[in-house]
Length: 497
Image (cartoon, rainbow, N blue to C red; front, top):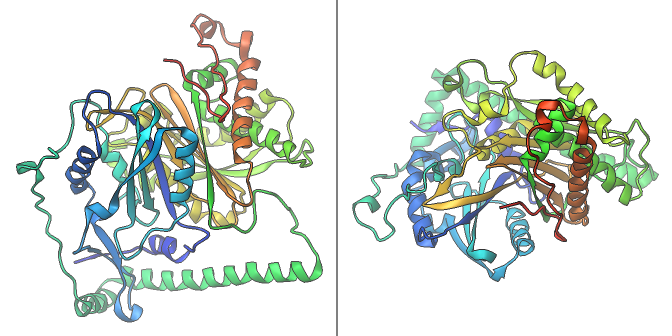
């Protein structure tokens, strides 16, 4: 029997349009070294590992008459070559060129007639590196039944290379798709509706969701018409909120985990608090460059997906153990240290519940990967969009030792979060192997200066580092601190070897 889409999964499909494609993206930079890692070996790796995520060979199939929610069915014409795509930059490709390519790719919705994912193997990067861009629909990865494909492509040992691209016994795929007829789907839907109350409840919930989405969309259009006729502006006009175009901008940043730990040791809180304080400071400086008024009480309301996994980590599923925490980023506060304390205070109640999970503990969960956390975090935030926040920030801790894809070392991983309806900016952060990387997604037309925001975030982090100095506890002063990196013209921080 086919698995039926849950109401919340179907909502991501119903709420999608050309201006708000509902997919999350990760861009991994890999160094092949002497591994022989190339496009053929990468395709062989995907072919070998896709068996661990069977949903990635299934597509969404509607039920005749809409008698029940659509189902996941095997794609009988599954074509790995369609999903694994080869691309290249003019050598030597720069990070700016890569970001522009990524922005164009993430702006395009996925083809709903096929499994809801694409992966790009991008050659030509400077230094002989390659990039792997994985784009997955939010209805696909729920962290319960399905994890992100990128999670199963990486290994902790450089010798794990997957199948032999030349073929042979390992190239034989035992998967055989199961064909489903419209009559069979209709019969199954009628049986489920009669025998399974959850099927009926799910169908009713989805229908209600369609009505709510239609009403909400009509309401936004009506408010826009009234505003145009009366000349009234929104109650809280802000560059972060408003209609979206169909195009995106992508900014990536590289920083060092040691800087966040230095600030944490000096002023308290957590690494996550320092990240959010840096984002608050970056938003403040960026809004000032745009001439925005910033009274001391000005804040930007953000939601931050947080893990609330209980004691038995191995028995839990990530998708059901993430909730959102609201935090008012104090962009009107002048002092970087006070901004940090205000953010830390906002999370005090969450930590006091005893259900919060430390980053090192979360990263140590068997099978955990930042790609799945970002996907699930974006899902959870999208379900809370009516709570009136202006920004979503996901922060996923990753392994602090190198990982590999078919022998190629992962150099950096950049999350590219989706934009929610009426929200022109989203930020995601990943820590890995001593580094902390940012992915900033912005509406291309509404925020043409997204690269300025990236530079402002780096400057805000440097302010916090400079404000730490001798304020560090004695134990922290005894450790040798690494000097801050230098900011490049493209808005990235050069990491030390």
